[in-house]
Length: 164
Image (cartoon, rainbow, N blue to C red; front, side):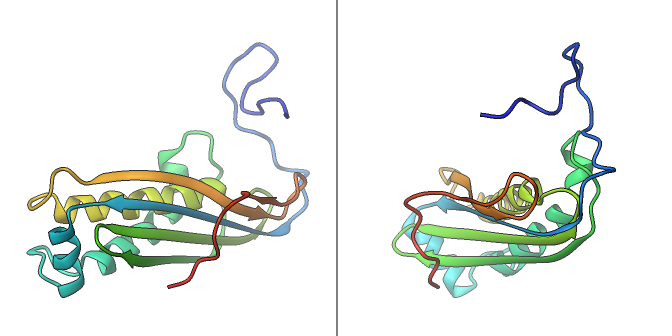
């Protein structure tokens, strides 16, 4: 395993210097899920939540979150994101799965942006549905794959192909 890069030789936090790194095409895919009561999922599907289109708002929240990651994660670099896709899969009787894919052509990866996007999409689902279901659970947020950069590609073993 590599050394932690966000600490200097004295153990102080630092932002990694990416000045000399090459620009490469970078992509990260993250997935997570929100588990809820079946009646809550039905309300989402039918557009019955008082706050409106739950998944539409969660999609926009995820995109905004990816773009705002350096404002939330102290050592994340502000980078030019070239694409963000947030997708949802309804899995009856009680689950919404979330997939976020973030892309850039830059000097550092977009894993944090994709993780932040999926996390905020899940939090938005929770926020919009909490009036009817406080027992919802946000879970299993994980990096599924990443490509580009010096460290190369990563693919999590055992992940199923995303099918809507």
